[in-house]
Image (cartoon, rainbow, N blue to C red; front, side, top):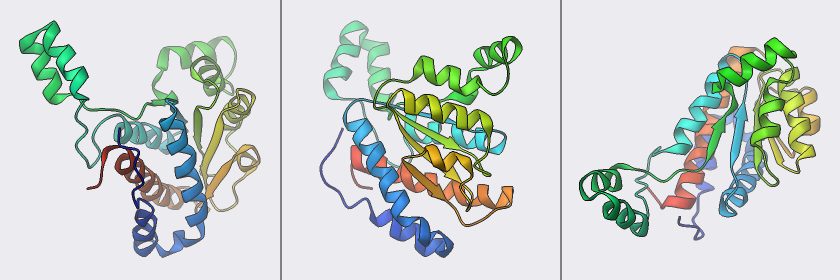
Length: 219
């Protein structure tokens, strides 16, 4: 991974030029970037959760982080050589096509765990249970809630703090109770659900672009 200093923060300028209403979120987006940058530089991971449309956003974020978003992410040459030594034909194909990842786990996709917990206990702890199992010290939890009051996201944030993880939240303009548990709360300036979601997407795309460029080079 390329961890040299790159002017990735220019992406926030571009974001706020395209979405002037997000200018007030600038400092929090920057803080979120540095939390994630530090985590990935130290071989930690990101765990993401949300409900409904925000669940789709959690999966969307993982899709951008786990493979190419905009930049080529070839595997390291040493790993490519190991692949071809194990199997010259298949290994070469893997070496040519695998992409480096910024490890991200969308907690919304674990249906067996989620449904088992909901059936045996309740719906409030479904993400908290997974976070307790997957999360480790200095990982990052990104909780997405348009209202900031989603109880299952708040519960997960509490577990994340107890595990000494960093917590970033994406919410609407009021932040809700969730903001109280966050190291950084990115409050987009809308209150109605669909309008909040429309601004969440460019925010997390901006973060994904900055992280990808930081670690895999400039576009």
